[in-house]
Length: 205
Image (cartoon, rainbow, N blue to C red; front, side, top):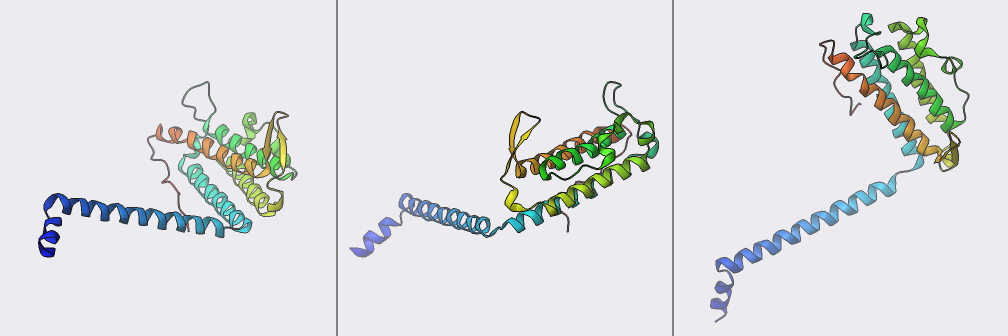
């Protein structure tokens, strides 16, 4: 009788139900394991870990932007896809000045002197050598700003443009986002020269 009941349970419909139950239990266990693992990793991060990651990302961004500066031919820095927008040089000069301006609001450090001038319309700032200097200097300013900002101050609120309430940490993130945006805009400038843009540096040792 027992044997009959056991083999009856293993008939195709019941066997499929059993396999589905096992599959569901396995997926549930995997999800719980991943969730616990992610929670453990998140809980193990310290403010120093986060600062180190931010510094690493800024160093990666600097290298990536230098790739863009070296990919665009020096004689094409004045190129504009259309007359009503910034040239390649002006895009990068805007990126450089904004790096310093936004980071200074995050850290309360004094902006570099040249960051307060109208570089975008300065004839002497448009060459590749000049743009390279201003851009790399701005990244160094940002990297040092992140390194020197006490994590205990990250949560302090600041009034931005006399309008927006933002934490210092929030401004660090927005500063990084801004340079990513303007570097990305120059991709089409390079493609319109018939040149392939730099390979993405999503990961870097």
